[in-house]
Amino acid sequence: MLFHVKMSVHLPVDMNPERAANLKAEEKALAQRLQQEGKWRHLWRIAGLYANYSVFDVDSVQELHDLLMQLPLYPYMAIEVNALCRHPSSIHADDR
Ligand SMILES: O=C(O)C[C@H]1C=CC(=O)O1
Image (cartoon, rainbow, N blue to C red):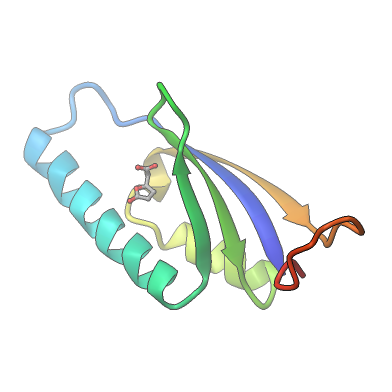
């Protein structure tokens, strides 16, 4: 199951810089592991924003929910989710 996810990050302006750096490093490590595992299929920066558009490939809505909630930056994110399904004109066999 594919899901398009928008994540907008809003760190408190007074957050300790070391804490912020640690959270970002933990987030990066998990994001890269999930990409290697094929769960986090696309990750794009939205130009000009501390936000991304992502595509997740998961087995269930519950898996997506659990995965998003374990992101280290989750407490500081606004998240929007849209379910995707195959477009009849798509030429990509792996769109499912
Ligand atoms: O930078 C972001 O968009 C937030 C988050 C998503 C992946 C990652 O490494 O950080």
